Image (tube, rainbow, N blue to C red):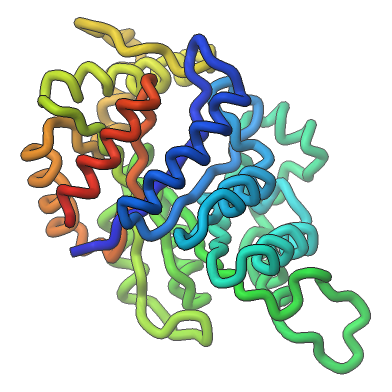
Length: 324
């Protein structure tokens, strides 16, 4: 069976604060570690009132410092927003503080709107240089060679697992070409999932970092004691997606009985969230097994933002038991 990992968006829910969200992320990571989850990733998003992980490397340090075994990393760092050297230094530092536990997933989207991307002081064409930036970044992790005048300190020789993230065929091709593990964002952009997996596996070239292809897929899992309760909890994610698509992002709303989605965005949301398993223990167990059988995933990155933190912890317990 595939390994299970966690993607946490550090959700800031209505009625709470960013401080509480960051505290809850660490609490969830400790919980996931006890349950046997393999890794715990955080994502870079900017100008999003409902997501507290914009300074992703800082939050990774917070989570890694409060855990002891689980791998911790970025799912991901949006490389167009950053200098490859500075990313190498940040993750080299994390690797020195927490050896053998740090992952670096790289994406080519800005993780925000165009205005915010400009405020980040990065060129709008940064995505065009993504492949070169990935190669440059991995180069900073290599040992220093004679004549090299600039090095990442920390960073040089760092033990950091590098991943390519994607929601299209581009990332699959790049990961295959570079011989890197590949994580597909099927939890919100499932359209190209099966084609991307096929291309990645068929075109994969072994590298010093990875000898055989390795695929991780995002999967929304909302688990509760009953199917009805899980469906109710899932309405928070549905509302958050609707608000985002209608141009009014905010904190995660509480679940809502008899939710009626805005007709302008309903079909798009149903498609975006089609890779979701929502239900009680039996339904979740079947759903996860069917998803793995259909995709051949080596690992699942489970994401499950729930408005009530205790119910979020319980959701991850049920998911872990489903695959245990």
